[in-house]
Amino acid sequence: MNRPILALTCGEPAGIGPEISLRAAWELRHEVRCILLGDAALLAQSAYEIDAQMRVAAISIQAWRNSGLPHFPTDCLTVIDCPVAEPVRPGVLDARNGRAVLQTLDLAVQGALSGAFAAIVTAPLQKSTINDAGVAFTGHTEYLAEVTHTPQVVMMLAGGQSPHLRVALATTHLALKDVPAAITADSLARTLDILHADLRSKFGIARPRILVTGLNPHAGENGYLGREEIEVISPALEAARARGIDARGPYPADTLFQPKYLEDADCVLAMYHDQGLPVLKFASFGHGINITLGLPLIRTSVDHGTALDLAAAGLGHADHGSMLVAVRAAADMARRQKRA
Image 1: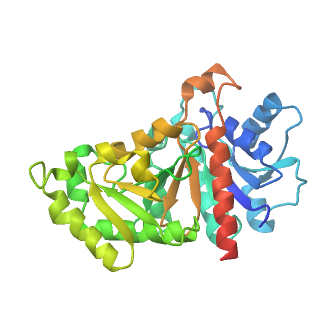
Image 2: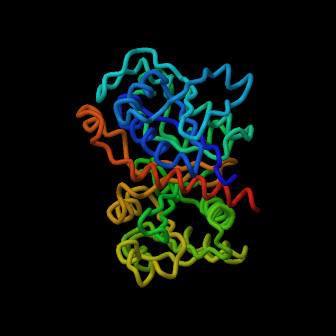
Image 3: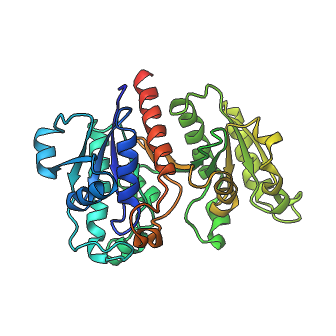
């Protein structure tokens, strides 16, 4: 486990995913063995154009299933070949390649659940391409929960340059009008249980301190701006504390993200996507990561999208900093769980 084996899905082939995956896997090859899942021909060509010294060796899905991973030397990246249906044009989406992208994710999950991979790291994909291919898809987080039969997961982003800044979400990709109904005492209880457990097991924090935002401006201002804090959030936090979880709040979100509060916290739980994530992305965009908690496997990802415009401009324009952080974080979690 000093050099854990990670599955690295290369994401949307027309985006920057293949490039940042190759660059991160190559740079960290002496620390981590990244098994890339994507179109082998595309990755081999990109690797040669990025660095002529970068060696790539491909194996078929069937060969991997039958015989496992071959023992290539450290200076050779392994690719499990998931061929695209149509030639890739950088920056140009093609729905006919959507199922090949989804296949990489399915294989990574299968490998992680079987023990072949210690964790999975995902490059950004394009939701619309998968939906246009005829598969209902709302995002990595929701899909991973579905295929692993996990009733609830928690999305958390962490700042790469400020490791103490972690922001988890009580709800994920929902329209704003649907958020209040989705925040219930039961859902908050499950979210806090997952946060507490995974901060302990995956991050090695003995007694996690979780600060929780309110839903409404000024945390409802004693009911004048909404009663969710009084009727749902505060009782859920009181119940969590009775279970031994150090959950504090609810706090007004507009003033919570200050150093004097955050220095006393291991994680902030925000009520919805655009309440907590803009703060974290402002502080660490390009060096932050996305982590899915509650799964029966370790999954990290970058904090950005497919950047089709950068891909269209050619290799060398994308920053792989977030992918480096995501790979290192997944490897650290895998080592920690192995020791436990």
